Image (tube, rainbow, N blue to C red; front, side, top):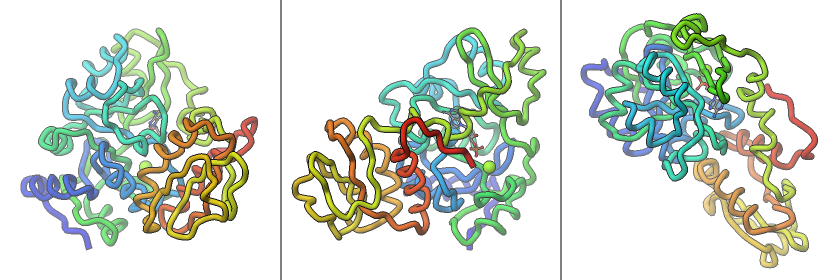
Length: 324
Ligand code: AMP
Ligand code: MG
């Protein structure tokens, strides 16, 4: 069962767990977050595992200050103005990533943009002490509503995580508002803790709505997800000119003739496989193979999200899988 520690006594324990690639539930002004080091693939994989999320959708990365934010993302003037007006606070900005920022690709589901937020209070202090951003979706199991008290987090996730930091009931109680600057316009991607009217008043601009829904639904992001190579799932054999994405110890027949070869996890560890998935797909794609054959991957635990991601990559390119 997770330990529950008050904010005043939780800092060192939370830091030690995060340093070790573990996840920690923390209070923020919006709802409780399930936080992991955004630069550590195993830590990020554990977030999906603890939540039981059936797919890898992009997570919000949380920063301590503007300097950290600028190291991660490229700010246009409009986004910078919003950050100055509303950070720290319940506003998330979607921005282009700065190349080489160290953010693990599982945080952004392989996208070249990143959702960034600067939380108030314990979360901000913790990130400052860690010196690295935290990826954190809401601290609830997939499909359940967001938790706004430490007790609700513990009741839901207590058996799967080590520490819940208790900061009392979260003041806002709603998720953050997500906004993206598009040229000289601003689009509301998700309504949340800061009213659209407040953002409109601060910028003197009307927020565009709709259209952005597609960005929130990873299934619609087919072009970002699809490698150039075709993808063939559950491969028991390797064909002519195919690269092989392997899993575990049992090899597909003819694996020696694969044009390129990577194993997601020699030991069959789904957490390791999840954390390496995006990089492996990119690397095999860059090898120039016509097709990437993928060995069978079990569906339990993180395997469901891994298989979901692979099915999307394997779907015909003119077909956009519906979001769930
Ligand atoms: P959660 O962390 O569960 O509150 O949800 C994060 C929200 O941010 C989801 O709706 C994501 O789809 C959205 N999001 C995260 N990263 C991006 C991004 N790079 N572009 C657009 N939306 C994003
Ligand atoms: Mg949530």
